[in-house]
Amino acid sequence: MAQGTHGTDADLVELVDDQGSPAGEIPKLAAHQPPGALHRAFSVFLFDLSGRLLLQKRAAGKYHSPGLWSNTCCGHPWPGEDPAVAAARRLREELGVDAGPLMAAGLVSYQVTDPVSGLVEHEWNHLFVGRVVQEPEPDPAEVAEYAFVPLDGLARFVETHRVSAWFPVVWQAVTPALEYLP
Image (cartoon, rainbow, N blue to C red):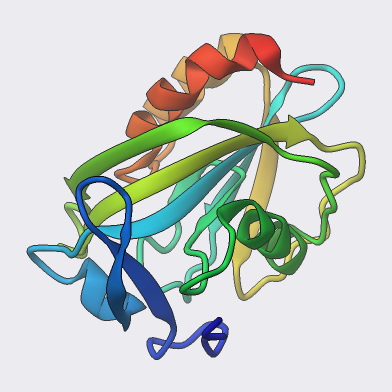
């Protein structure tokens, strides 16, 4: 398994074909430059015991979508790394939380362009949901701030805050799995 250098443009991501089978490796930044290369990713949605969704505001220093609100955690497995293992790793690295077992909540493939940076999300995205029972301790290089948002207030939150280009797509895709949330 390739182990990219955390936080650099030299990180490698796994290219996939339109069936999700591995198709090579590419530097993370190159995968996001137009027109975008289809690659493996993950998105995590954690909820507290009151059912509020944990959102994060991406740090200002992030190469992609800095300062925008998004789902609890998202990222890319290293080539050959299991997406669930990668998701748990990034939850610890970004937010300092151990969510316990994550539940697979489907898969979504999409291509969206960030209107500010022009970077492209062309992803084969593994979705996960879970519970968080501890207060996050975010790495400020990754997360500027976080918020627990009640689901009945999420639409208003999205209307009044700048969110990542991928958030509406992954949220819509994960919503059917929420009824099975542990």
